[in-house]
Image 1 (cartoon, rainbow, N blue to C red):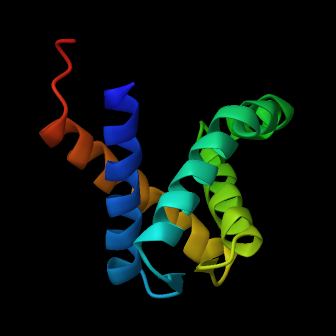
Image 2: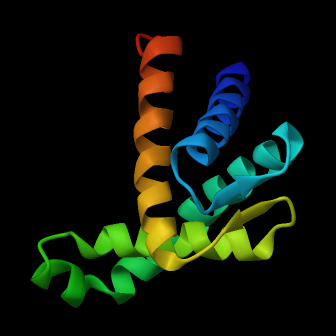
Length: 116
């Protein structure tokens, strides 16, 4: 349970970092980043698998690159849904989702010990 809370906090920190690195993405405060990180995680767990299955032919034709579009679309959708977190366009969403996943992965690799 503690590890889940740590990952949630790291994702919120990663989202705050994305706002400084990608123009067009704005987070009002850390509380909004926590809520956005939670919603992004839930969307990735609940909605993304369905979209990946539905777009499997396009994903196969593009050799998997269409998943970047799906990630960006979901990132943009969460930004339009939540107050305190905004993403200006789908292209910014694709870039933001890519930067967010890289920063989140690096932070998780540094902070968490995978031997558990």
